[in-house]
Length: 429
Image 1: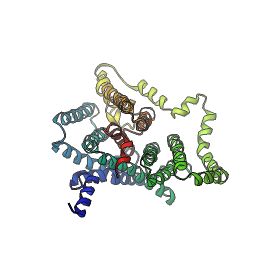
Image 2: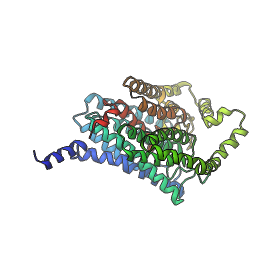
Image 3: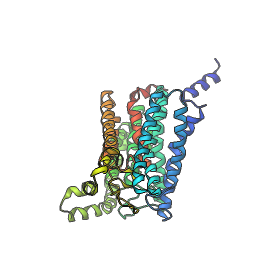
Image 4: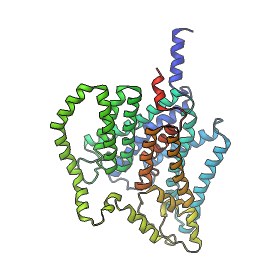
């Protein structure tokens, strides 16, 4: 075999299914295109062309397009078993049936379409997992490439957020010029995404000793800090700890010198900037008697009010099994007026009120199963990252029903459940 032939063979091994355009297109669309669609939606929201929760947004149209392709690719694939295809079909029918039964009561087209858009986010996550699973689990080189693609996804989101912040055309958090969500609609969702990917980039650098991922992690830490939410700051703190550990490994003397300089000159400036972010939080803390309300951002109040409003009598007792649909959820289905309900900011209770106790229980058990599986396989760091994302989902929302961060839940589960341990990546040349 000639040298050129050997190089071509190595390239084919490095880039999985390079000649299978379907896989390449879906991967690049999810990693590169979807964050851009999400930013376009935020730009329209910033310009007040579209309102929050509107229909036919760029994000929805982009995901509708890739959702249709995923349905076709999954159901036409011979690698995916008929049992899995049937389960996906039954689940989709369940969601459609739930929305259709509720539509018989409210007789509204917009609520019905909104409900379909709402549950399609869950179906999208499942299809992404099923479609990528065969590829990620096929070999160590594919697992390595997928790991880097997940990091690249967070990097794309971070670049879009930072670019919007630097340009001045962005959406502020807490009304502060130092806290931004870029052009993404949800600050918590983008914080979970970039924060998780910064941890993954630094972990990848630790395992492979590739410094480029160390610098990627540093950039994503910066992007996470400027978001300014409690979630983002928690991820930034965890990433900073790992960052300094890596810094002492890669650049020991420089790290000591820079630590002294940062302590003398940078820390005071950062403290002053962060004080502006925390000013709103401190004012609320002083005014609220129940301090737990601040930590939960009144989410417990939203859930309590939802239980108080819901009607369980007579035929409405079916809501325990099928929910009230994505649009009305806990609202009174006897009212035919157009109700814009409050999002509960808790994915577990969103599932419960929208699609019943079976859907909520299945999601909760999925999270527990994934964590147990990760611990059993010795993937402690990846399990911790998945746990952070999942706990944010069931405690603070903005994951399962947020386009930007929902795919991170799938990516983390794929990394967690693969047959290869991340430490094996260093064996690759």
